[in-house]
Every structure is written in structure tokens, then in C-alpha cells.
Length: 581
Image 1 (cartoon, one colour):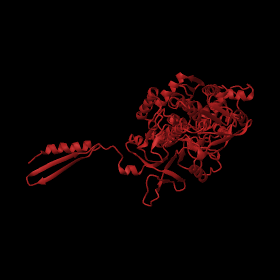
Image 2: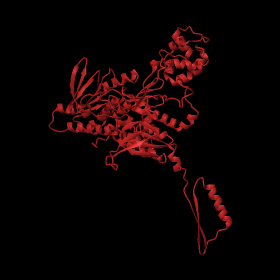
Image 3: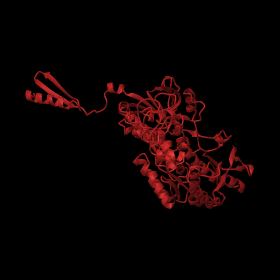
Image 4: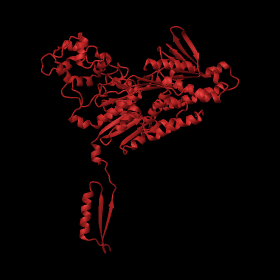
């Protein structure tokens, strides 16, 4: 028989009340024929939200696990929302290293992070479904999905998910410009599977060329690799392929190494046109030294199973045999987005438009980011009368320099092209802008009317620029949108954005502002070109090491970071893997 004093039970009761906020202490008193027995169990601390609190959370549905979607998920406070993710792939891929995967410099699994690993760090508060969204229905606030890995009770694998907020980050598809034969005969380079197919195709071309009893012409055809598109992806792949051939395959296929040819076809006058002209010239000169043919001002007309037909104003139409073609000419809009655009009144556009807060035009509580959308920056001249009215606080019909200075910060934030124009003209402020438009005959005490105000801002909209479809932009958009969601309730009561030009008060959030951190162009032979902020250009082997450090640091986990670095070391020591798997 076990006896406990009354004072002990009192102390136990007090302990229950003190610990109730953190755990559950269950005290059971069982009365039996010999006395009393006290048993207790200390449950684990449970800081998760109670079910009643979970049900009142808004449901956020995220479509896609690319750069934009993953950046949003990593930075979102998932305790505030019921987060559900739909994507046809259950991993995030570090796409800037895809050209390295094509030639075995880096292994495919080294640059992918399972999305459930990212979810695990959020204490399991994210639901994920491996399925493809094939229709967005903004009227009923649902997305319709189809799973390829299993079926539901109806047997077709389809299901619908309703949402309170929808984040569209489905990316884009390769743009073929409706060129005949591209889809059937060309490789693309946007997904892990694309890089793996290219890798197998390269090895198949070398194996075919090594077979006996085939002509030299047939060998040359099999070993002619064509890259259509002189942008960063196409140029980097051409450089990787050249290094793969000269450093590794030439030793394994000595009888055919001299028959290999690599061609880059570009519709414009130069490759890497988005870079500084110094980088463009260096890249073209290096490719010429390396024996990579750069064919500029050529437009591809058709691709057959054994030849590519292109035209040039000088040579006319020519047909060139090939062993493999990689098509890298930009991106196009996915069918699901085209259908959605028609539903929200954007059917006449080529890409989904959002405002500066990443909200889809013509649709409530729907956001789009990454390659599937573009920010439609509002023009100053569209709102010039409203801007003047907001600045004219005393309703005098004229503006003093002080009144302009009071709202200039809000104007520059709402219309970033104003600040870009001031920087491009090396103007320090609005007074310099007035002098620039009025022949330097402006005094600080002058008051200007609306016509003079229009004249001063007439050309600032020339600085409106579309953001590039890059991983850097998508990642920054995802991070920005997550921060907005995290403080949505706070900013509803205390707005932090600029003044509303067409309305009262302030915008809830600051608009998205892209911060360019620079761009790289690996050119092979352990040489890389970099264009960094401040118009700083760096080219050479030292820049290659900067590229290594930046790309290693940008990996989404320590696991992938270690795998990528180990792949680079393996390549330095043992060379690239040439197995056809």
C-alpha cells in the first residue's frame, strides 16, 4: 500500500497549474481495497497551434517548386497560414548548374534538394502534393490538379484545391517560335531531365562515330553539335561541351577527336548581348580561338531528323547536317497561364502581368512571380495629374520645391524609373531635373504649374525596363512576397508603403524592387566573365574562382553545397564521367 500525504497532493496540484501552459500532467487516483494509488504521466511539450486555431488560418496554395516558389516557402512564416504546395516535381533544382550536368562536371542529384527536406525545417506545417495544375479557376477560387503518380477514387488522378491566397510560380516553357521540327528533334535545357538526355545524347554521338564501316562524312555529321541561341545558357553549354571534348573525350576517342565541331547559331549580331560589350567581344574571340564556330545573324527555319535549315541575308538558305541540336532561345508562356490570362482579361498579352506588389491584374488574392509573369510598371505620365494633386497640399495650383521634395521619396519608390532617370543623367534631385528640362533658368524659389511639371517628367518613362527572366529575379520575388505575407496583419493596421496616388492613405507594403547582384558567363578553360554592380567587369581565371564560391554559397542546403564542391574536386582529380547512363 502506497500512501501520500495531503501536502504532497497539494504540491502536485500546484505543479499541474504551473506547467499547464507547457504540458499536460494527468493525475489518476485509483481507489482499491487496500488504499490509494497515484499515477501520473508527463506529456511532451506541444507548442503547435490547437485545431481551433488551425481552422481559422488562411489557406495559401503555391504552384511550383522552382526558384520563386522555393524562395517563398523558405522565408514564409508557416505558422500564420495553412500552406499547400502543388508541383509535378518533388524537388528544387539549382538550374544555373544545368550546363555542368550535361557534361558530367556535376552530378544531377548534387543540385537538387527534395522539397520535403525544406518542408521538414518548417515543422511539417506544409502539405505537398506531387501533381500538375492544369486549370486555375479564379471565379470559384480553386485550382484543378492531376497526379501522374497515382489515382484517386474516380481513377483519373484528378483533384481540386481551394485557396484564400494563390501564389503562381509555375515557371515557363522553352520558346520554339513555332519553328517546324524543334520539339521533335531538338534538346532543351530547362530541367534536370533535359540535362540527363543531353548527356546521353553526347555519348551516343561519340559511340556512333566510333562504329566501323561508316564514312568520314557520317562521322563528322554525328560529331557536329549545334547550339541555337547565343544567350548565357547556350554559351555556357558550348563552353562546357568544348572542355568535355578536349579534356576528357579526346583521350577516350582518339580516332575521332579531330572530327568534332561545335557551332553556336545566333539570330542577332552578337552573342551575350545582355552583357557589357567588352564581355561579348572577349567571348567571341575566345570561341574563335577554341574552334567554336559562332554564326550570327542566322535564323533557323526548320529542323529535320538529320539537318538544320537556316537563313542569312548574305548566304541565303543553307542546310547543315548535325549529330545533336540544343535549342536555347528564351522562354514562352505555359498553356495553363495562357488559359488563366484569358479568364482575367489579359488574353491580348504574351505574358501574365502583375503590379509592383506581384498581384495579378484583374484578380483578387492571386500573386504571380518568377518566369511565368512580369511586373507591369505603371507610367508616370499616366498618373501625372494625380501626382501633381497629391503634391499640391495647399491646392494652390502650383508646386513649390519644398512640396515636391516632401513627396519625391514616395514618387521614386512608386515609380522607380524617376530615380533611374536621375542617375542616368547624373542629376542630384528634382531641381536639377527642372533645370535639365528648362535650360538651367530655374531658381529654388520658383513655383511651377502642372504643364511645367509634366515637361520635367516627360521623358522619365524611357527608363521603364522589364526585369529579366532569371533565377536571381525569381528568388528575390519569392523572398519579397514571403516577407509581405509575414507582416500582412501588421501592415493592414500600419501601412508602410508609399502614398497612394489614386486614393487615400498609403499602400500596405513597399513595392518590389529588384536588386541586381551581377551575372556570370563561364567561357570554358577555367575562365569566366563577370559583370557586377557598379559596372565592374572581371574576366579570367580569378573570376572562375569567384564563380565557384558564389555558386557554392547559393546552394539551398549544406547537403547540396558539399555535393557540388565534391563533384568539382572529383572532376579536377579524375576528370568527367563518360558513362552513358
